[in-house]
Image (cartoon, rainbow, N blue to C red):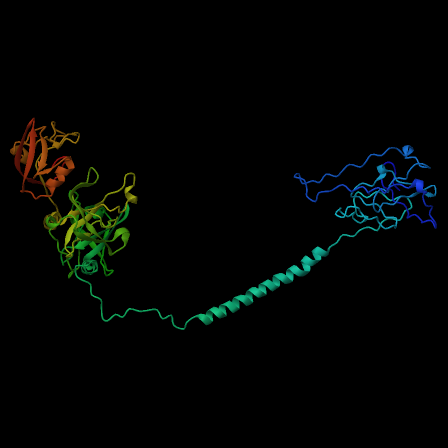
Length: 521
């Protein structure tokens, strides 16, 4: 029964009376609409919980609503909610005893009254598994316990495995059928077009391919193994009896005791070699192998080279034998100094954009006729780049072939090389126009060598040299490399300023084979 406290106490179903008394007309009560169950949202709150309404608080049992004549009976508590008998007569339930929405009360067997709201949520059927169901009254039969359903799990076990197996089988069958259909579509012959070649393909002698074919057999790779490791470079044949020209810095370490020097030819032949002579002033060296019948390269006239001429550089950069690169002559008479303070080479270089990399040193730079016009010797490097990581940036430099010819002849004939001088010290601290002759002696060397070419031409301490052979000079190294591009005995014309007076003087170059200061031309 429903108590005043609001708790639902289940009781045994009431027995209907044979002839229930009918209320008198004066006792008729207008039909009251059944109270609508509170709406419960199907969506959880933002916190993830659904708050349940509180149980209604009822007055104590002693304050039950009165019954008797003149008191209209209360409306039923709600559809499907039975009212138990009181003292043998049906007692109307008070509104405060309405069951809590959402919690079912065991039916009495009577059919539920129709809801006046057709879209109201149906009252769920009662079962004993509701965690908040009211406890059974003493002696009342307990509701049968609900059993958990395992249907969904049974389906997952029964059906998932066969579905996986079926998917695998379908994949295999599809792959086989796809392979067969693809294979069936493959032509038996690809039928790609071919080029019909009759005989050998000839290249013009002045093409890059023609030049490379003529020059490569005479270019060699040089390998020196010494205490500081192994260094490699390039070279080319000067004479058919085994003389080979290369850079001094390629073979400089071959003078050490126990060092080995090996020359690798284009056909793969390796032959031991010896140094005939070398000079750090021009960064040139001659080595010899005991081989006859070699094909030498011709030394062309570097004075005939002009900016824009096509050139080809050949060598073994990074040990890659027989590498051919092409470019043009980018500039002439570039003053280049290489080496350290003890072994400084001054080069009046040919500049090229043909790729020159470490290992190209000593290799030939040839013109369109296959003649050597330069010996690849140096490359420019970007600021901050270590020399061991340097590579081509399109600024390569080669020793002119005319200079190489004269020096190579001296090395083969005497083992040493000489260079021309004018006999003055230059002041590298000067920053004005031209270059200045030093005013003071340095380390026992006179600013102007007594009796030397400059002294004989009337050049004095502190004079400014503005030009050489009509070409302006702005740096001491530029004057030095220009002088060393000549032969001893040549005459050059210098534009000299003494105080405010300028004049041209003729100077005949003398010869030196000693290691003088870099500032001594």
